Length: 437
Image (cartoon, rainbow, N blue to C red):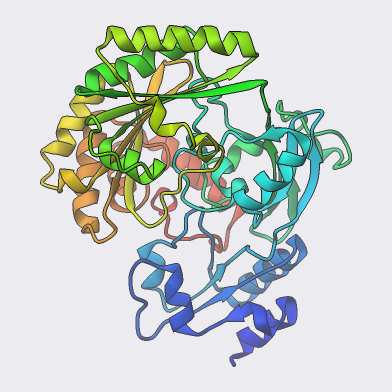
């Protein structure tokens, strides 16, 4: 064991420092280099994360974190570095049902949290596309939720962050006191926005306050089949505009089967899923409105296929093994972007597609999921083509990020780099992300 491993072990324990490449390779989609001396470290407290960061500064060693299941391929090619795995930081520190907030460490899983919230008759707006099992990671990275048709706001506030110098930053009202109630407004010194979607380049998130929602008196899940995507997308645009539903998502047949487990052979090419929540009589009224509007578009009512699957919309839809591209669009441009995907040469029959209505139908999140063995270069090329056509990627990575940032206003990039240099002069935290180069 190296001197560095000894020092790390003195912080977290010998069992929490992993230097075996066979084990470490499970954190990547691509093989490690033969000379790799990366190690995985599993801290249990924010104090241990502080000490790891200070050790990294002392030894001039980069520290990497990820909000996804796998670390970027660029990290796998490095000879040395510390990869943080937060699964030991799995405490639900506080549940505040009165203010509909929950205070969780980064290693808490959705399954763990959802089980506990059921005791309080509250739940989460779970991700429609989750790239890890951590609620803190997913909400801080601005994930799209199934309830985005009504609740599009970022569902996290007050954070505990280990800064690049090893000090702690408490954002929001926790900057004044951690004993006060958590609120969605995130008052006081509101610097939480620095960390949203920033992939820990400014500091390592170790804890976050997550928004929760009441369990309503009644919930109804509807499903409608369409032969044309335009008709399906019109439904998930117009229903939220009339405030009929909280969830409005369109999936192609492949994605519908994967997400729901339904294997019916008579499915339409496109299926719209509509979630309605509220008081009993109000849900009944809104259900009738939704059915009438779907029938006007010639929909095939497939609701019976989901009669025994309503609970599945209370857990995330994971997208961890597939390669993916996700971006924002206006509804009137969806067909244009879809045609770019069709012309990409990638196998359409193996691509899962979701369209999630956001902000009362004012826009849509488009998600394409590719087989895990799809060549990354082809996905990069497609992403660059989509971005060039106006698709808005809010958290791009790799070649796609390099292409997008190269075309942006230079003052914005300079501002990001200035903040990064100010907070992380040693460039310890996640070096190599394109916006910081």
